[in-house]
Image 1: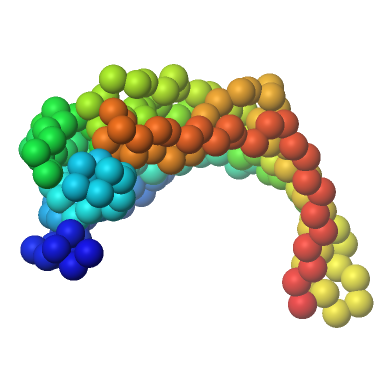
Image 2 (image 1 turned 180 degrees about the horizontal axis):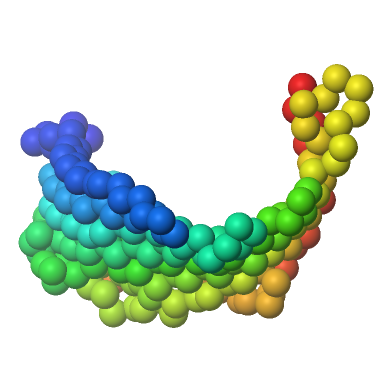
Length: 220
């Protein structure tokens, strides 16, 4: 058994972020650039010596992207927020182990969408707050060779809250209603996949269907 693990090094990740914040008269902007390198990346690949798929520290990957947070103040009661994220996280080389080669060089890492977006409006009027929101998850792959593509998905949510009058010694009492996935969109939330899809398999977990949650929070 020890011969299977000889020569392994621990996975290492190095990340650099560079961000700034700009505040104007009616908007604020916070872009963040990031870069990361990953060596000895844990990958689930097939080992013919034992006829099994298991985690092995044999991958190399690099990533870069941009995360943007922007708020536009359209009035005293209305705010528009837009938070897009672009991520390129790709394998640096083909995956070669125990005589097998997987064409991975330049492919997006499994279950990593290039685009994510969260946007919506915040409307406040007295004790009321309403937040309609849209979430977008870009397409991604369930295999290392980027042959099995999972479609993008758009989910609509709604948050509403009402701040109640103070009662006894309370600092704040708030009644909130959350309506998630209003359109009952069917989509894949999480992918649990073997990087070596030729010998392994992928499990797909559905996103949460339409749900409602009513909460009462009290702060003293």
